[in-house]
Length: 377
Ligand SMILES: NC(=O)c1ccc[n+]([C@@H]2O[C@H](COP(=O)([O-])OP(=O)(O)OC[C@H]3O[C@@H](n4cnc5c(N)ncnc54)[C@H](O)[C@@H]3O)[C@@H](O)[C@H]2O)c1
Image (cartoon, rainbow, N blue to C red; front, side, top):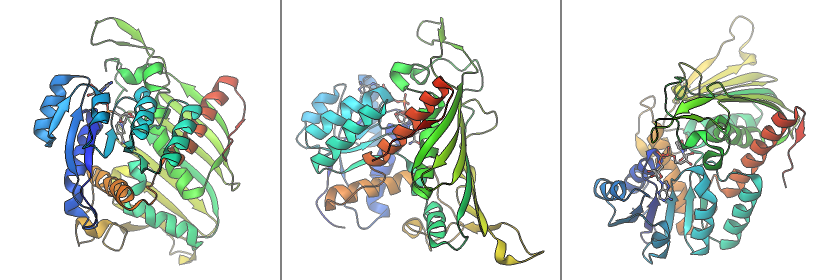
C-alpha cells in the first residue's frame, strides 16, 4: 500500500454507480499498490435511492445534491455515473472544486464540450479518467503488444462491432437513452464509443469517416406518462474509417441486434497473421500466424492468465478468467494510482476527446452523406 486513503464521492447510483462502488470497495484488496479509498458521500437525484445505496455500498453520507457533494471537504475524488448530458457540467465543476474525476463514457455530448473538459482536466493537475473499461482487459494489452511488436507484420484492415440487443424488443420502454438532449447520439454514444476507443488505442487515430445512422424503432412507451414518445437518436450506426496510419476500418454498433448481449468484437488482419477478439468470450484472444506453414494454419486460442498484465492480482491460475466487474477494478486502480502519484490515468479525458471527435464526424458524415475529415491535434 502507498499514500493516504482518498475520500470518494459518487454521483448516480444506477447500473454504473453500483459498478464503481463494487470496484472501489474491492480495489485495495486486489491491488497492493492502492490504499483502499474511504467511501464518503453518495448522491442520486432520487434521495431514496441515495439512502439505500449509502447503506448497501457503505458510504458514510448521502443526499440528492451533487453540488453539496463537491463542497464536501472530505471528498478528494469523484465518480460521475449520471446520464450523459450531466457529464460536462459535473466534471467541470468537480475539477474546479479541485477533485480528481472518474467520469463515465461518453465524456461529453460534443467534441467542443469534450475539448473544454480535456483542457480543464489537463490544467487542473488532477487525475482524470473516462470509463472505457473494455480496453483494460489484460488480453487486449497482449493484443496491443503483439500489434506493436510487428510479429504479425503490418496491420492491413480492421473490422469492429459493438452489438447489443437491449432495445431490440419494441416494447422496451422509452428511457433517457432515447432522447438527444440527455444521451446525445444513440448506439454510437452508448456502445460505439467503446469500440472507437479500442480501435484508437490499438491502431492509432482515425483521420476520415463515412458514416450511416438508422433508427429501427421510432417510438417507445414513456413509463412515466404511458404515452408513445419519439426515439430521437439512432439504433444502429456504422462507418467506414480511414486511420491516420492508412489502415482501412469498418465499424458497426447497434442496440437492436438480436442475440448479442455484449458483442464488442473485432477482427484485425495483418500481413503475416491476424487477431480476433470477442468480449462475450473476454478471456480468449485468437491469434493466427501465417508462419505456421501450409496445412498447419489456424487460429490459436490464448486464455487469459497471470502472464498478462494485472491478471495475477486477481488469481494465480490461467484460464480461470476475469469478468466485467474486474475490468472496473482495474480501472479504479488506474484512477486511484494516478490520483495518489500524480501520474497520468488511462484512458483519460484526452482519449475521450479523440473518441468524441470521431463520433461527431460520423454523425456529420451521415447527415451530409459524404466523407468527413476528423481533426485531431
Ligand atoms: N462503462 C460502461 O460499460 C457503461 C455501462 C453502462 C452505462 N455507462 C454510462 O454510465 C452513465 C450512467 O448510466 P447508467 O446505465 O448507470 O444509468 P442509470 O439510468 O442506471 O443510472 C443513472 C443514475 O443517475 C441518477 N441521476 C440522474 N440525474 C442526476 C442528478 N442530477 N444528480 C444525481 N443523480 C442523478 C439517476 O437517478 C440514476 O440513479 C452513462 O453515462 C452511461 O453511458 C457506462
